Image: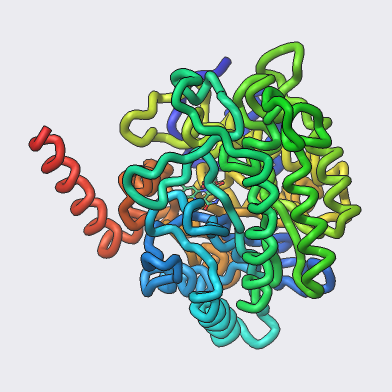
Length: 452
Ligand SMILES: Cc1cc2nc3c(=O)[nH]c(=O)nc-3n(C[C@H](O)[C@H](O)[C@H](O)COP(=O)(O)O)c2cc1C
């Protein structure tokens, strides 16, 4: 077991040495040209291998439509040069929002999503030329046990989980009938996404939300959606099948948790015998099935942000209320890189997006370029880095390296904003906008503490 060690590397050699001390040779290449090698997804050319990971902004209008704030974030990504933009978690029903300001795609607001996609494409083409077609994916989500569309709303769970629930009393379990009808909502949201101009939809199956919870629903009884593998993967595979057979021309993808960080039988992706050994057998079978059903892109992640957030996003500083993890964040980065690499090598012709690169700061391009070269992923996905330094791809294209003064420092302030339902972005590098949000959020918090 390692211990928590914040990023303190002046040179790449120091970083590589630290990785070797943890027993792993981190891929590394001074030559970063592989990041700019073209690739195609289902025949659609994508200009480079840098992807914006989905990052909720908590800034939609009440009806779920993107606001000026949302637009600002996505235009910064587009003008920053990423070849693929994975739009954030977007609710498929009003009730399934994670917060009142989450994006939600509906008949009423589809046109505003369409306008956003058009503006994103136009901004990128204007800056990088007409052949720079940004591949746009919309992440469709039901927040499951984390649904908070309005104050006082009581979310439903897939099953009792002792790692997440204090007790089994007062829990409301979502019924099979409700899940059947929810499949229609995913299909309808995918149809709207197609009309809005997205290249693909992601049937989100990660980070503890509804579809991820279903993957680990070993203890859900007397249900078509619980118990054995067939049942636990039913929702995802049936929805993928229904979208593929009903909406011609729309690519289908899934962001999947390879493992949840919660032991069997309450989480997906760990061995049954020993509680904390990763077992990728089921996720491989699942991906193989999704490929047969016509899915053409995968984005692999892990962990449960409300349980052990460092597994999903290795950080230097935890958000208040989250204990400092015992492991070195570098170990978490390595775990994510190795997991994606394992899956990419199992399916060498399928594009996979890798994750967990923001913690590597100015060194991520060298690690990412080597990962691409060694076929450990097809895209290098950037989450928090995209908030902090959306034009990192552009700097890499023009200057061949990153500006150390613009990188994400994994301080978790973006998460802190999110946890307090404030508009979310980088408090450190986008200070004039999100510094103000942060101040407002802190003052509101102090006022409410004084009242208590
Ligand atoms: C503020 C915030 C919002 C996020 N929103 C989403 C989301 O909407 N969908 C999703 O799949 N992951 C979401 N994530 C996880 C990121 O996409 C990503 O997996 C994680 O931050 C690790 O990548 P990084 O090291 O590049 O930041 C979010 C993370 C943060 C910090």
